[in-house]
Amino acid sequence: MPRHTTTRALVTGAAHGIGRAIALHLANEGAAVAVLDVDGQGVAETARLIAAIGHPTFAAQADITDATALAAAFDDAEQALGAITLLVNNAAFSAAGDLAGIGLADWHKEINVNLNGTYHCLRSMLPRMQARGGGVVVNIASVNGVRYFGNPAYSAAKAALINLTQSVASEYGRHGIRCNAVLPGSVRTDNITWKIRQQKDPDVFKKLARWYPLGRVAKPEDVARAVSFLGSDEASYITGVALPVDGGLLAGMNVMIDDFILESKPD
Ligand SMILES: NC(=O)c1ccc[n+]([C@@H]2O[C@H](COP(=O)([O-])OP(=O)(O)OC[C@H]3O[C@@H](n4cnc5c(N)ncnc54)[C@H](O)[C@@H]3O)[C@@H](O)[C@H]2O)c1
Image (cartoon, rainbow, N blue to C red; front, side):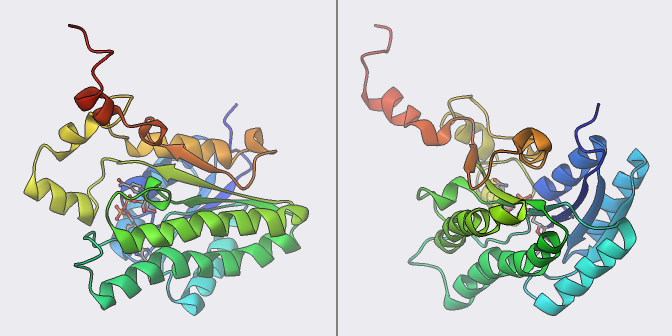
């Protein structure tokens, strides 16, 4: 029995990469899925792929930093599919870089999209879910939200998103709303950050793999499976958690152990 036959999901940032994979995975598990993105062409293509699976879908072009346009898009999605039961806050932006190099405009943009934009989504959706007696939210944060891996503005926003997840879980649990965060490590997508890094070094994903105890970077589907679980009734007593989906990256310092602590190395 598919997990999501009664789910009506809305996935933000679903025109590409992880968001598209989440939307398709939920549809494959039986959900009706609304997809939203600032990229109208990309999100229309995701909706076409969902329709090809044979599930109801709705594509909305909207910028999550525009609270008014976003609320109107949520209205349209609910008009088309019925009340949304699962919100996946996936849309994000990063120009990468380091703290010394980041300009003020990029700092503001990254905080605005990644934190404020997600807040707009919550602000519009939580009262709807509360009025209907419940719902589920999954926020796509990052391992960057708990450790330094570069991208300081993005990381600060993701750290705040983990805390915001706890606020929602704590305040809205009594209204039947669960809220959890997923923390991916490196995921092989064609987002702008990875494009730039691959231009600099075509072997970037291969080199990164040694940092991951499981020996590889993630596929978008690895994240989608975790979202599907947290968004389902199988996770009905789980709220307020930040679940790493990182192949063990946060568990330890593999590369340091391999390079400097030699006891376990064969002679
Ligand atoms: N790829 C990785 O290695 C990685 C690692 C950790 C976390 N993540 C997180 O996973 C999620 C998806 O990442 P991805 O790699 O698929 O990125 P991506 O850039 O491919 O997808 C992000 C999507 O969000 C959309 N978007 C950006 N700004 C928007 C806005 N203002 N309004 C609406 N839509 C907007 C983009 O158009 C794009 O389709 C993000 O939350 C990201 O932070 C990714």
